Length: 164
Length: 164
DNA sequence: ACATTGTTTTGAATAAATCAAAACAACTGT
DNA sequence: ACAGTTGTTTTGATTTATTCAAAACAATGT
Image (cartoon, rainbow over all chains, first blue to last red; front, side, top):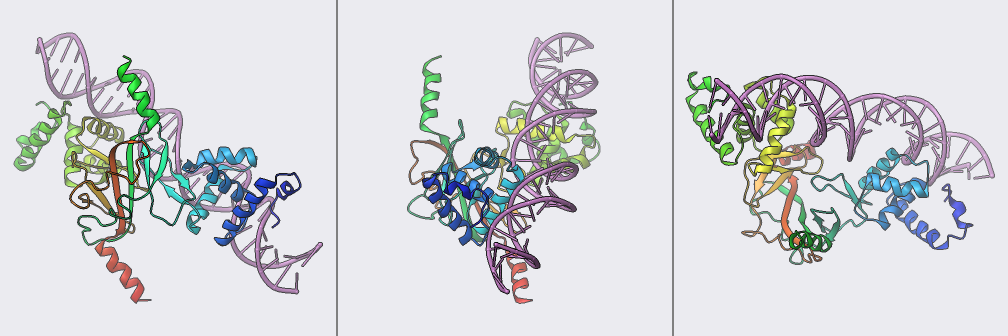
């Protein structure tokens, strides 16, 4: 490959260089050209799943200054189309992205601190995929978001309650 | 009540006048002041559930010209806080509103025409409320959105497929 | 009727995402 | 290694959905 930044190979970044090859392979396998912004976005997304475009932009910037926010959006759009990343849009939040694709896992979101975690579908698999009455719809997907308090926020809430 | 527009009582709109009283009662019971914009929004929402703010604004406008979009947003916010309406935010759509509250019903959305219908929770009630692993979260709610093709759009797709 | 409190209007601002054209870089075949 | 083609990124502007804030106004309790 001829991606700008290849000089990293000489710079002794062996570990991340390996990463870069793996990332590059994913991108190539998806039928996309391998570019520096794409590698940077994919690495950022690997390190912090459930990030929004702006957070990824922030992360990419430090690795690759000069990258534009629009480029990040463009990368995420192409990744999404290619099936490399999944986009989730919890209510009240900008879109979040993750590399875990292909399974139908769901998400649990803290209503207090907005942290997001993956959860597997309840009861082994896909009980939610069959609505009580599909109303004639041809159902292709079911998206479940659980809302609640994460353990740290439970602790914090408890402090508030017991310490008036 | 002294709402502007009470003249409708004289204008022979007996049916909608009854409606207006029922609507007013809902609003009052929620602890909110009864105003013309609130009645108009609540009526519009009764007639077309799963509307977005802009659609409601359009409907309200014809009944009560001079109402501002911001008023509609304000009404929806107060209704939401008071538990009079529920707000849903399907991915890729502006927020939608509905009067059906208090049960944990879900939604099925057509990926082609964006029509939204209510669906009851699968398997009687709340199987989805217990994720496979709650990861220490105190889960308060589960939100399910089914995505698929509504029956009209299935027909349309079929035409496209068989009529090249 | 009046005062209080809450609501609506008016006008502006924000956040998230998208569009479009020109500059540029990656892959293909040579 | 090289040049052409195609796809990507930059730059700059625009759109959509929503929120904020102050002043004008209206609904309820007395």
